[in-house]
Image (cartoon, rainbow, N blue to C red; front, side, top):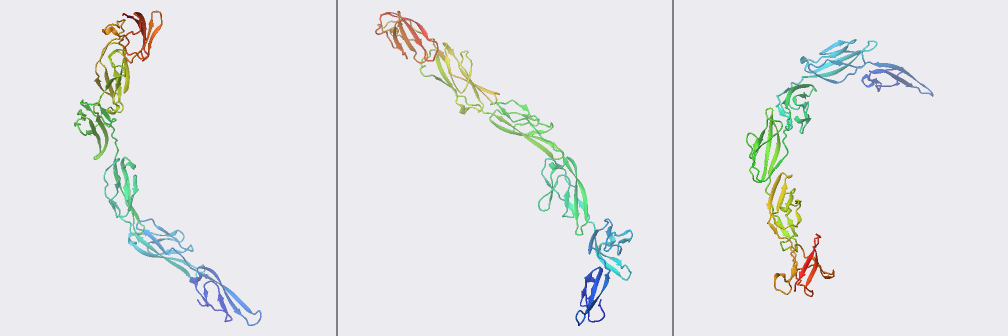
Length: 459
C-alpha cells in the first residue's frame, strides 16, 4: 500500500517500507511502527510523525505426508485460534482440527488455515498440501524348516522387494540382503517380520514362522588303537542312541570287524533329526603293525669262556618299536626281570638258561616277545694240584673262572707272598717255586667275593 503524509515531501521509514510503499508480506505478521519525517529549510527545522500498522497473517507447514487409514493428523497453524478447511478436515477452533486420510483422498489435498484480525478488519490465510499415499500391500512366502546346526540362510520371498527382515537370528547381510542364522535363533518356531516402506513413507508388515529343528550333537567314544593282528569284531556305540554307523568293515548293525592288517579306519556315526537335519561324529580305529623285535645278546669283554660268573649285554634298538614301548628282559635263571633297552646281567650259577625279551606297548594293552639264544655255563673250577714237569693238562695253574682275568695272590705255607698278578691269564707253571703247598687268593674284577684255597706243586 502507498503511504502518504502532510505536509508532502517527507519520507517514510520502518519495516516493510520501500520508496513510500509498505509491503505487508515483507514486514511480516505483527505490530509495526512506521515513521514519516519532513525536513525544514532553517536551522533546527523539521518535524516527524509515526503510525502503527498491524499485519494480520498465518503460517503453516508447507507440506505434510499421510497414509491411507492412518491415525487422524492434528492440524496446527500460527498464530493459534484460526480455522482449518479443506477435504478431510474436521473439528472446531475450540476442540482443534484434524485431517483424516482415507482412500478417497489419495494424492495431494490443499488445506487452508485462516486467522481473523483482532478488529475483524481482515483475515490472514495460509495453505498447506497434504500428500495422501496408499499403504503398501506386503506379503511373504513360506520359509523352509532349518536345522539348528545348519548354515546361515539368506531370507527371500518378501514382497514388494527392498524391505527389511527382523526377528530372532536375523542379521543384515551384504548387498541389502538379510540372513537368518539357525544357531542364533530359538529351537522351534521363530516369528520373522518383513517390513516395507514406500515413497510416501507408509509402512506395512507381514510375518511368517520359520521352524528350527533342535540341534542334537552326536558323540562317540575316543579313538581306538588295536593290537597287531586283531580280528575280533565288536559293536560300536554312539550317543544319542538310534544313529547309524558307516565306514570300512562296518555292518549295518553297527558291528565293526578289524581285518588284522595294519592301518586306520575312519568310522562315522550319524544321528538324524527332523526331516533332513543330522549330526555326525567320527571315531578312528587304528590297527598297529607288529613291532620288529631284534634283541641282541652280547657277552661282555673278557668273557669268551662260558664259565660263571658270565656277564651279558642285552640290547634292543628303539627305532623299531612304538614310542611307548616298554622292553623287559627275562634271563631264565630265576632272577628278577629288568626293564630297559640296554641292560647287563651276570649269570653266577652254572646251568642252561633260556633268556627272552618282552615288549609291551599301546598303553601296555599289546605285547610281543622273542626268545634269545640259549646260554649254557660251566661252574668255576680251581685245580688243587699242578705238575710243572709233565706235559699234561695240569702242567700250569689254570683256574676256570668267568669274567675278566682275576687278580692272583699266591702265598707259601709260611705266609710269604710269592706271586701277585693283577690280571692272571692262567699261564704260570710254578717256575722258580719249590714243590709243596701254596695258598691262593683269586679276586674277581667285577667286585664279587674273592675265592681262596690251596694248590699243591708236585715236581
